[in-house]
Amino acid sequence: MVAADVGFAEASWIMVVKSLVIFAVILGLVPMILLLERKLLGRFQARYGPNRVGPKGLLQPLADVVKLLSKEAYKPDAAVPILWAIAPALVILSATATLAIIPFGDVADGNVGLYGIDVSIGILYAFAFGSISFYGLLLGGWSSGSKYSFMGAMRSAAQLISYEISMGLALLGVIMMAGSLSLVDIANAQADTIWYVIPQFVGFLIFMVAGFAETNRPPFDLPEADAELVAGYNTEYGGMRFGSYFMAEYMEMVVVSGIAAAMFLGGWHGPGPDWLGPIWMLAKIMVLICLFIWVRATLPRLRYDQLMSLGWKVLLPLATLNVLVTAVLVVVT
Amino acid sequence: MSGRRAAGSEGRESFPYLPDDSVVSVQRGPEPGGVRGAYRAFGETLRGLKTTMARIVEGPVTIEYPEEKTPVYPRFRGRHKLHRFEDTGLEKCVGCSLCAAACPADCIRVVAAENDPDNRVSAGERYAAVYEINLARCIFCGYCEVACPFDAITMGHEYEMADYNRNDLIFTKEMLLAEPIVRTPLRNEGE
Image (cartoon, rainbow over all chains, first blue to last red; front, top):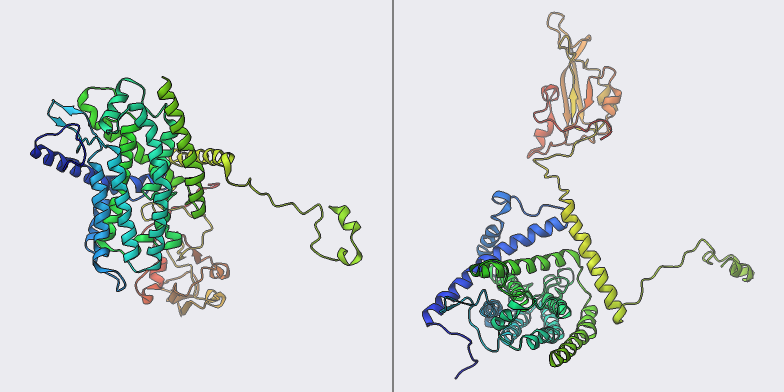
């Protein structure tokens, strides 16, 4: 059974090597983003951020990970055993799986595509796994057997429904302009024309706002709102299980930034020789992640009803309008 | 508003909360929601982003404490110091116990003794054989400094006196006479 058409497929051993390399790069990127976030957040608040562990605080993420790893894997009595354990795994699994479609370049030397896989359903794959990652939050929150976790989980479910539609509609404009769902094709379509962030600026804004909500980043971190819900869905988690949730959040940030970079910012295209492609892509991802951090440093958390009204009353009509205008323009030109 | 007060009945005139001109109405922001609300939220978000970016441009204001210290003012009341005459090297303290009498926290203990004329310790007739300040009790009010007729005791600038043991906080005469190991930075005039 074929689940989806694949744009370009290599020998299976190349696929394995490729996925290992992408996984290793992103896994290495996550602690760096962690440090970057804490450092940058510090600067945004007129302080230094961590600078005690190692030179300039560079070993801080290492210290964090060692701390998390050495903690006791404690399970509350009220927790539902198996679900409680697989929920963090589910989150990290879906985040990792979504990485596969982020393109770091086109087919290099005619035999290796610089991406995990180029499925023809492209962005739908990302949405599918994005929804599965919410199962992780939902299951984790529910199976913890704690009220705070449960409320966090319910919020994350409501947030998913409110924002995934706008997110999909925001990308629809780009998809219509490029005439393809595949991220590789979309990035290639921007090579000789202008980046889609200019004609699709509204779509970009909506996608980023929905992306903040999708990754549970401030100002939409209601599922884990520490002021109201202690830590939301991950209240009862500790040690590396909590670490999985934490890491998945940062990986999802990379994924959302990667999708935005490929769909709106021209992907791996940029000045310079072709081999710079993956570096351009990583640079664009990092710029978008800095935007994530900047917004986190700036905006306070939205109230729950504000979140809902923003999602349904502002973003959804705007995204629909954007799609409508784009559709008309695409047909006319 | 004042007209309303005049028009009111006698009973209402004595009511203390009747608004007059000095009462300012509460300023309310525009109602949230709608297209204008969304537009305004977008503008305010950009303003917020500008504010945080300005903090990066400004740079951190952190003083990294153990390495860097905030300079204290010249009249800062820190740990006490006992003084000697600079020319003769004799102690200024004559063991009069006025500081101990002035101390509200009762943390100074002075035991005076007669000076040996051949081997003088202080300039006066007597000297402090024992001079102890219990810094665990001291409230750093500076009354001892005021009470001292010879300026023998003054408040210094040291404030890092944390210790593991209460007994270690009882400073003896030798400790109070010695120069502090680490000097506290001092503010310059007008700083």
